[in-house]
Image (cartoon, rainbow, N blue to C red):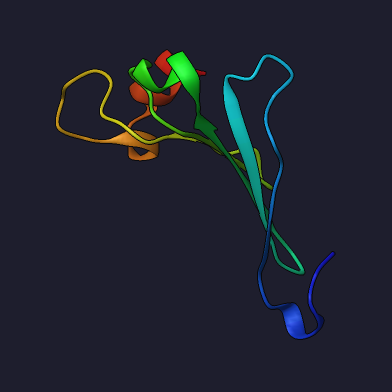
Length: 82
């Protein structure tokens, strides 16, 4: 559900079926962003959390390829993690 006036709401879901990530959603009138936060052994993963938004943009938390550009600002990081 979206709050009246277009304010943002967040909903947390318990986890993926495998238990590797906890999924949360941030919703507005015109947009959403999903974030997958690693849990258990998955927290050791090089990517950190993953994001996906309403226009299909994928993102990651960390600088996976070590070039000093972190996460979704770096297409190589996104490609390596997604």
